[in-house]
Length: 59
Image (cartoon, rainbow, N blue to C red; front, side):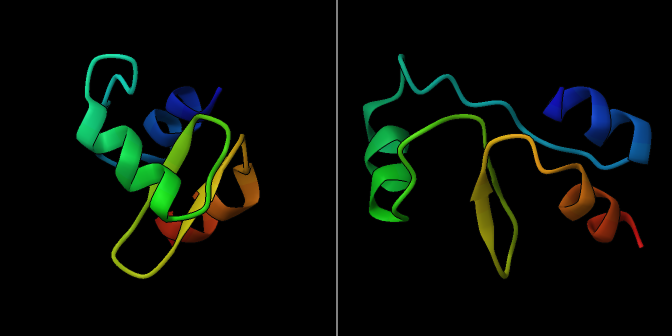
């Protein structure tokens, strides 16, 4: 759902498979996230499907 909403809003993104990238997994854990998906921007990050935050990014 997160990828679909990002696409809908025209926001580009990179997908990182945390099961294949140990460094990325450690980075996400260091941010304090315990579940995926994680969206990380220049100023913030969040986990889970947060359509209101994605819409705010597009504005």
